[in-house]
Image (cartoon, rainbow, N blue to C red):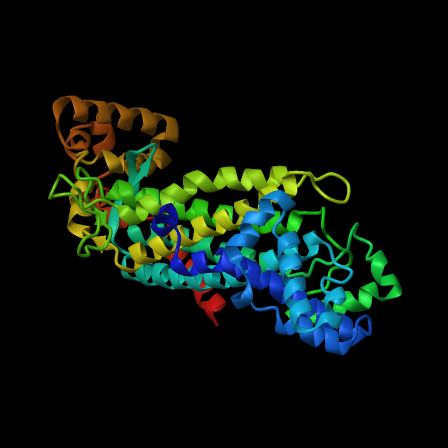
Amino acid sequence: MSDSLFATDAMRDVFSDRARIARMLDFEAALANAEAHVGVIPSAAAEAIARECTPAGFDLSAIVRDARAAGNLAIPLVAALTRKVAAAAPEAKGYVHWGATSQDVIDTGLVLQLRDALGLIEADVNRLATALASQTRKHAATVLAGRTWLQQALPVTLGVKLAGVLGAIQRHRLRLATARRQVLVVQFGGAAGTLASLGDRGVAVTEALAGKLALDVPDIPWHTQRDRFCEVAAMLGMLTATLGKLARDVALLAQSEVGEAQEPALPGRGGSSTMPQKRNPVGAAIALEAAVRVPGLVATMLTAAVQEHERGLGNWPAEWTTLPDIALCASGALAAMVEVVEGLDVDADRMRTNLDITQGLIFAEAVQMALAPEMGRGTAHSLVAGACRRAIAEHAHLREILAQEPKVTQILDAQALVQLFDSQHYLGATHAFIERVLAGHAASAT
């Protein structure tokens, strides 16, 4: 049930029991064909084995059940495959899983699953980047209060907030490409990582096996060097953190007392079982659930990487559910935030209204910096801070208080003072930053 709430259907398919067994069978078929190609086993035996490497003829529930006693999924799967081959071509049964060990089929099967998973992640990351770029352009000049420590700080634009997220997503795209290159590598080492059972043909079989699976060939088997899987976990963890930050900001902007942006209004979305008026940020909730869970899962992957000698005891199996769980969480968070950004409901009028609720205090730094060249920054800071305290105490607008201060009016005339309280005149390099991020997005899309 939780998977249906917090992961996409496509990602659940990638990591289903059926898909896991299918990818492991892909390894067994490719291994047999590779070994026949190199001359290790007869071609007829390889053909017979490959014919039986389809999930349809296996009792998946029995294999999963028997894995508990065996210690891993590969042992009952190879036994079942051997029985199927023996029934169809008895002379070939002795060549099933030739020279391989359980970790080879499990690790390479997981690599094949990750290839499918990262393809789905990449497609949604690209979709999110496109949506962020569109909203950034649309709201490049939509001014709202920037907030530090949850308090109004200075005016910013919604465009520059979204551009910050887009910049992070572009970096994640690069990390994703790197992680794909690192992890899409065959694992084939035999019993202890030396391929001793294949004599002098181990390297040739590895190269043929990798070619048939469209994977890269490692310099050396990586059965107890788990950095490849850790890199995928960490990359997905960072991506999920970015999605969580975006979700948190959207949820805060959607608070009733703020009301500056909302998730898309769709039938049945964000309702309450008791309160008809509710419009809950459900997309943000999904992304934040992932952002809460994934860091611990990434830590589990890093902990599991400390494995003993040539096969880990207990730590290697910890990866089997942890890495898929990370991908499942990331998929749900990503899909949720794509939907949120594509349909983001922005209330620019409410943003402008909220800029005024502090009666000009949000422009205090602008006044300070205008005064500083004449009286020094420290003096200007003290003067404006005092004016702010007075404005709060008297429930007056800061501009009115400053207009009564001779030290201010000697430097700033009425027109200059009015201009300092115009948010469009205190956005700094906002538009330059937006254009740079959008240019980077456009370059990466070509």
